[in-house]
Image (cartoon, rainbow over all chains, first blue to last red; front, side):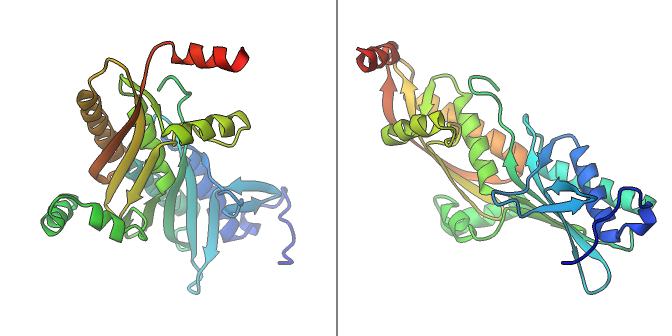
Length: 125
Length: 158
């Protein structure tokens, strides 16, 4: 891909909806209780480069209808709350944030995968 | 919804849901909604089951003799994960089955320890993942006697 790197001084309107959605979903997920971090996978496949920084655990994929499906790959925190509740909370937060930022029409399906879990130290929980 | 699915499965498979869990193992444990799906990896279920087993008093260690020997070697070089050794899971769309191999402290009642492990794993896995645990198979492969570690350390050094 020959796309130019996005400059830090660019206004949000000049950043592509794909990157804005990836950034938004990633930030909302990481601010949710029960999420430890993004999970890029063993090979680092699930990550997005955003303004030169890497967002591990998020992909935004273009669809033919001008929307973007967003995949979040996450490491659950410990102690671990019910994961489906965590996912529901993330989903609601991302949808609301996308609407506030004028990205509701760009957001397609939001897939949430818990690929790993943070662990308590051995000898205690 | 899940209760209905579980009941139907038990009626179909008789003694347990292992067949259902195995046949659905290609499908991610997921919850679908209009906005997308939620998937929980097998590795997460394995870690939860391992941690839940270790929480029970009387459980000295997880894994068989070879697994523990290999585990201690790989952990020393930073490759192993003690929390998942001796745990294997089969995860279906809505159900999971867990197999455990472990060492029990000498003097503990093995049936009571096993029942406590079962109960804790079911509580943790169902509470965190929403999966229904159909069975927890426990294999006790050794007893731990206090002083075993001291003796093996002395043998290694002297």
